Length: 72
Image (cartoon, helix red, strand yellow):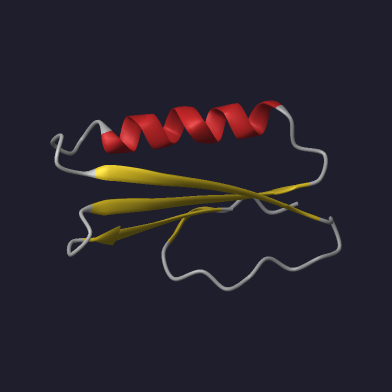
């Protein structure tokens, strides 16, 4: 699950990717996607990349802006 929040006051993109405990390459793909997103903004903006791993039976926390969710 991927969520993004744009905060104009901080000029920051908060990029959160939540994976299950077995994720490996997916984390790198999340970083690449974050780089692609921040490249659409000028140099005044930054990105805060966050990656979390949860157990398969655990529900992810509620997110405001979900960009992508892969049902499993």
